[in-house]
Length: 208
Image (cartoon, rainbow, N blue to C red):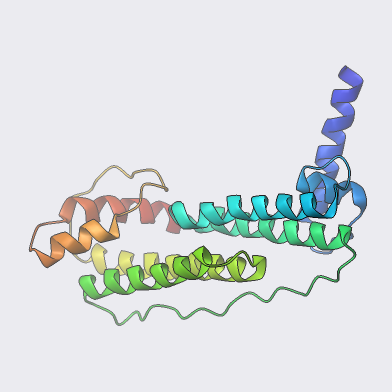
């Protein structure tokens, strides 16, 4: 039992080293491990498996707060699913080109406009993801969201830091500002100082 555990641990380490390598050379063992397989199933079952894995990753990008490092890690895993699948099906995997995303203008000095623009970009990306099972498209839009979140946080930090708000204890990275509620309050002239201060504290940690 202990020998088998050690063998599995060794295999797990080898697979993790392989997956983090910039120049992967796939083999059947690592492809099966990435897809959670013991052997290659019939074509229809294999297709269903890949679809289920993509559904799982897609749901994460649609439902979770955008923590860039976590999003980018999930994108890496999503692309590995495609590479593993293509290897087993003996299909050549096209090289993935990361999207070039526009940064938010650092001249933007209107908080409401900043939040509204962020909401619109994220909604457009999530709409595209929700309508597709294409791994390259989902990966592209998820990375676009991640890059835009980084840009948003930088501009938000500069803008809100100048407001001299009372300091708040930083929340979890996943406990981000609710943009919809914040915009609603701004539209109705309701103070969001506490929310802004908490978001500022959270972003201060990510910017380090």
